[in-house]
Image: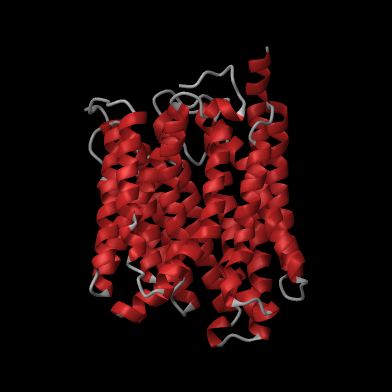
Length: 470
């Protein structure tokens, strides 16, 4: 572990830190690139192998499986050790990629996407665990800043790379590229991670809870494909019940997937988890429609419309780098100003999304990303640092699970509200204007709650900071 005496950017990459950082960034890069690539190549996929009736399912099954993989990261890493767990996760992802690369029809492609999601979910969860285990508290915000850069690069380069493959009628090449990445992961893990013995204390993987969680997420995802508002609402409520049931079963289990009391606002960990969920929930719904709104309301070319929403990733990366080295008193300020910027950005998007100007809309999207970047790393670090003894790996690995749940519920809510606004009846200026009223109006609720929970987190961490100074 790096020493806490050096806190500059160079100290993160000194000695074994460079290999460790490269390994963590590679794990996250696989997931980040996939998120931005699939939407670009999917038209070419269905044109080649058919299955247009299942157009939404490659993303739906991927999201569902990735959340299941992320939820199992703490248990898998604790039982197998980080190096073996990474090998398992990377192998599952590689298998899924090869299935996609050779798929003769959509049914096989969907199997591959499911395996990919399971592998990347596990990889991202293990990456967060590695941040906690391989870097001390002073260096973690710097590591998270590097990870934010991965998302920014993926948002900019992912659609371009995938577009080139699609343009040359070789969409399968995206998945063949996984082979060198897999070999790089193996090499980095062997050099950066010690070989740990297999533990017999963590018990078996709780498949029943993972299946319940997966079914709940699938209900959320499928709800976005239904055109019947009542069915959509029923599926979302079923998902809420499924997640609640999974949390209760996990609470009484001897081999939990999540740390104890993960939704408690009386604990720093639970409060941080709520912020991650509400943060993803608040900005996902508007982001789902931003490319469409930019094209239809502001005449942005389709090739550039995706970069309107990508401004958020750019803002995230920029502010993460400037905020990473903040002192503890400043961190507490950033934990409040971050959600405040997100709330302000969403309000601003709602103001400019219909009438423009387009540069003002992009500026508000950028502001939303700036808000995420200035607080995300510090909230993650506080959650990791305040984990109960024995729950360190579970606490770190569950962070991406909470974020992904927010993504899933945000996307489902966007689909439900757009249907209520009349989008299923046809795309017109009037219906798109109604959609923005519903989407941005609703997004204010989780964004406002996030700000309140952030104030609660700062209140909880103040005594910890006081004891540290004394």
